[in-house]
Image (cartoon, each protein chain N blue to C red):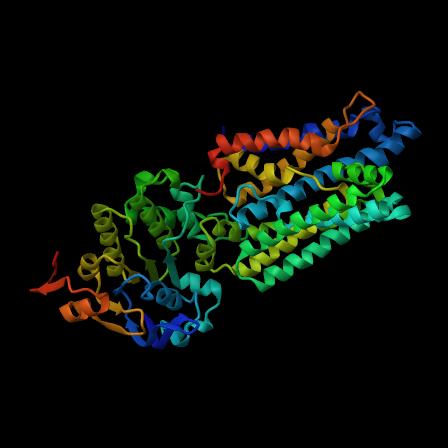
Length: 250
Length: 328
């Protein structure tokens, strides 16, 4: 469970998110939606404990995030950011093994249990056939899945995913989202940012809309599928909602 | 080739090169001389020249290589070496000021070693201040490079007005050599290096987390700022102490980590770090062995040999050795 109280996020005098209250229950999927620069990634970093808020508090499982040390945070929340590089010479298995790092000893030697967790993570994401492949030979979709497997090997309650479907073609994005949905059913709390409106409304339990000027709207996906809300926050008049479906006027 | 065979190759390199370094030189030393069977002159050569020289090359090469590995991973730049911090430039400037403008002091080896150490340490403090002040590690790289340009300019100026004898002393120091260290001075070189080698396994996991990027390391619970600071200090100490006794030695620190990644086909520091130490030490002993031209009365500058061997290796790696690179 992730909770934010009166949270303000920004840089210096620029406030992107102001006095936001959030409660993201265990096993839920939440999608952050907003234009470029609206503060999706910054808010995610603050909720992730990687960036300090301008004001307000964040807690995980009822405990203030400021009370966790770095290692504890990494054992509770795993993160995927779009600027993670593909390490040349690393295979998929070696990448996924990085997720077990906080459980290994001094030299990073993997135990049998670690190897089982790695194999399990690779199987859940459905990339067993790629496990010996080098990261540089993977497509974007395959690489994102390999990163997701690394996050699963980390064995955390929370997953933060910053624009995980960007640059993926539709089948790869659908595939990826399907895996996320399965993980949420297994109790993982998933927070993701995306520009993919249709996918977000299809998979998320909660939607957070951001306008980049401090304003935010948060609610369950059904309630948030609203023409005025979406057009207002995304600064467009080309989105329509009819019978619970998203339509685009082009 | 299995991993075990690759490790065997690494150890065989040392098993062949270290005895060769002890036995071969302008004076050949028979095997039995190492077990008390030599004459007085041979014993002096073994104790005062061959053993210090071989240990300096082993330790110095391993230290430069480890520093190179730290810098390549830290800056995520395959062409970074231990010299990127500008420490060798600091040594060059201090030795340049001493030898090219120091008059009588210039003849003392102790003075040259001290000047090199002071130059390195002075630059290290500048680098640490920059690392402490700026969040971006690239700033450290830029300051290191700029210090290098600045000190080169000052050294060129000093050279332009120096007399022939002073110029010769400075140029000889710049050649680099593992032969200038006495047996009694070895602990000053080897103890700091041994200490850093012993603590280096602490860096294995954090360095692996740096491979996909700084942000990745942060999400895995690594204190990136503290790691950067520790790596800069460790590299600074190693380069400072090696440059003080052996002069500015090029290429070994740059090439050895690439050789290790290429041999083991992985950038994983759990494998690459020990391999880099072994290959760095081996490469330095090999360069030193070639530089002393066994069976002849002549010797080559160490940096000339290192560049002849190192430059083609680096060029080969850039074009062919994809696995040796750490960036996509």
